[in-house]
Image 1: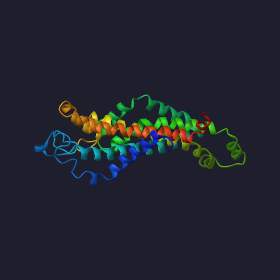
Image 2: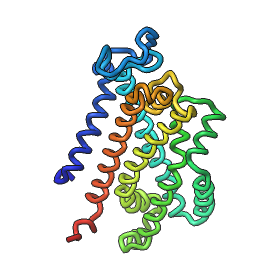
Image 3: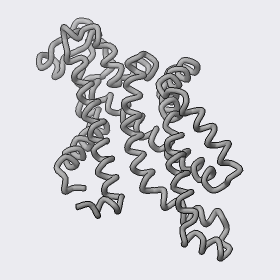
Image 4: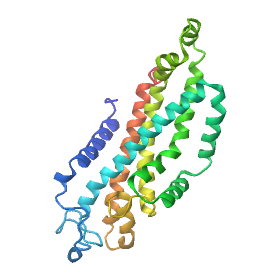
Length: 270
């Protein structure tokens, strides 16, 4: 993976985003929620590094702290969707009487657009970080379940599994020892895509006013607040948008590189 310059650059960018999120109190010395009407709509590189928004809040501080929200949303959605999807996918692939129930439920979830499902859930339960995380995770679970189920079904008739069955090995041990390890590579790759998709979905929900509460700095909230002043100060949208784009692009590049590294067939290409 490190032989590719784009992958190395993507890793550096993602590492910087993670570092900024972890070191936000030291990198941003101004409270991102502090209001200062006397300093509203300041241009970048004047009194503040990236200027201030319509409420006098420091844009640089909000961009840095917004990385925390995006990374929490991405990581949380990836872990939850992979964990739940792994359990349901293994049950659907290994037990025929559960296959129909689980997969028809997943088909029903996939029939509902993810954004609409997230907006409906947030509207019913109220906006909070936990609610948004659940709303982002639900649409991603069916995709993970399908991947795991397909992998379980493809491995079920392999000679090493048939040998374990012939020796009288209990089914739970066969699943744990022989089948689940074969799902880890595609699950790892899928987790990176869920990570990137969750960051975008969180930004969309916040931009539409159905995501993270406005008082919490996030890139989606920043772009929503700055759209009325785009002609006056384009940086109110460009700075958080650039941070969002670079983060998602770096995660996608790392996911593609991870897919190539974990797929043995890629090594056979000329």
